[in-house]
Length: 168
Length: 220
Image 1: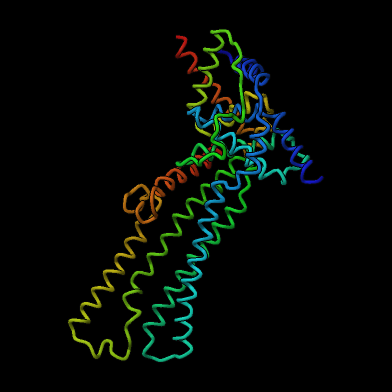
Image 2: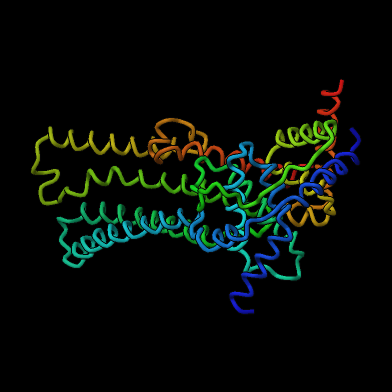
């Protein structure tokens, strides 16, 4: 595979999986102004690790690993790096879809409760909500499947409690 | 809310968003080609500078030491002993610098989250730990200039007491700093000053996170 086609292939895969980057940026950055910086950092780290990617592993599994590792490290960093491009343009553009008010409230609450979780729990629940199997989650996070099941159970309990506190 | 609803809610919401997401191809390509440095690479750069400085310093120390040993005189015993220890301590510091470089180079974000985050935390903790050994050279900077030729027989009692107090106080200071320059004290102001800037806070966070990952991995 020559360098150009390799780059084109990478760009295409990023394009196809842009939702993963968006969701991770949205979940890990409290401040919306950091979304762009994190998105750039994730893409850079993906490109940096791209030569290691083996087709034996699902692209999305590999992408989640790199993106979540980048997000957790970014979140923990005290000083944020200056982004490459400080333009008014956005790397990922979104046209806000119309959401029924009740659903919008629920999704906002869910996002808020997820933001209250610790970084690793946040990664777990994101993967769970993305309907990844316990096996795949275990592979991405680096813990056993049993541990995944136990932890997801606890996080779901926490989310249920938080929702019930609000609706009571 | 039922657990199935969480998944459904998430799915519905992001399905709509997914359809409306557009990636800026030009910025994407720019990001890939222009963002030449990550935070770890800047650490590598910082460490590489440190290595060059440490090597120059060690060459100077080594040259002086080599000269003293190759032209050995019993009068130079204090000098050889002191410089030898200072040299060894600095060799250890250089080894730590290189170890950080190797670690930083080996970190690739495509490993499992717990593995990569522990590696990153370990890197920060090691930076903190390595700075501790440097304080052990302090007392030897108070003895390297002594010579069997004139010390202690040709100096006054006053000087002997002064020399003793000076070496003893530097030894005590080195011991105290070494003993207290621990992860438990990483939040203290003097430790932060010693390791530079806000490094102390970063170390504290790295330590807490390392423990958190351990619990996460092995806790039920």
